[in-house]
Image (cartoon, rainbow, N blue to C red; front, side, top):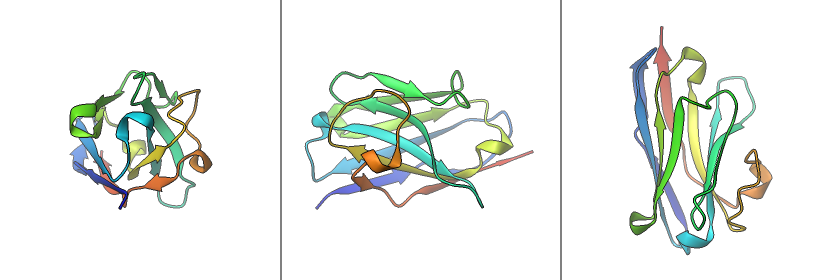
Length: 126
């Protein structure tokens, strides 16, 4: 059974940091790309960052570039999203997802990702 389990969300003040984790199981992790998406209240889900588990290529949305870092620990089948200098506009439910093509070619798009986690809430207060 394929599972993606996010953790690490919470409430933090603006300027603070959080590290999200995405633990994967049930598929060959090294073959996949893992993306982080987020959905704020009343808004569509958007791609934040993604990483290829084979090449470690990464991509970041402009809104998080320089503040967020995505990384992969293939030995643990886990992808992390280190979020620094958090802003209130980063408040959202964050989801990780897996793409079997394993390719990172730009902005992660929802339709490219087959498996999804349940999400973890990140709230940034002013």
